[in-house]
Length: 174
Image 1 (spheres, rainbow, N blue to C red):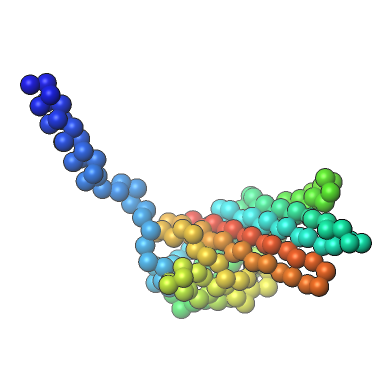
Image 2 (cartoon, helix red, strand yellow):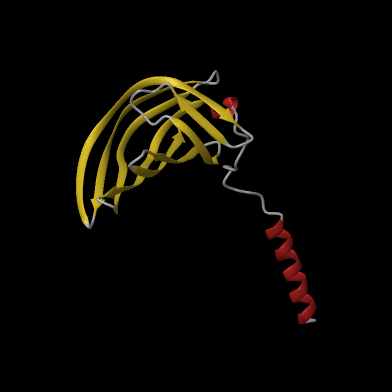
């Protein structure tokens, strides 16, 4: 008898758990101009740069970390592909070369407009036309009704150095 009760309770529990609806109401949805249009607050900004250069035949690596905080930035994305970004935030830049690091902090002020285009197949957004902010093609790593997270990874090379650059930005819909 106890065995049958246990199986019955287990079956009911599994049914309830497996049929449980996603309660957060924030599931991923289609990346499109219509869905992305809105007003967003910036909540996160980082840039990591690893630069390798050769000095007298010896490779030297410099690590640069840029971290934003104290965000008062508003991003408005319109359905027609235009955008504006206004506000200010603080960035702390730390450069480390050969075990020696130097840190600098500054306030960045944004007041610019540009455009964006979406590639839903590749889950990317390309931002262009901005003078005072990061332009480029970003992989959208998370897109919900309330949040956008995007990352850009690129490599820049010259004859004397190579830089791997990773930029990540996050915005929450107002």
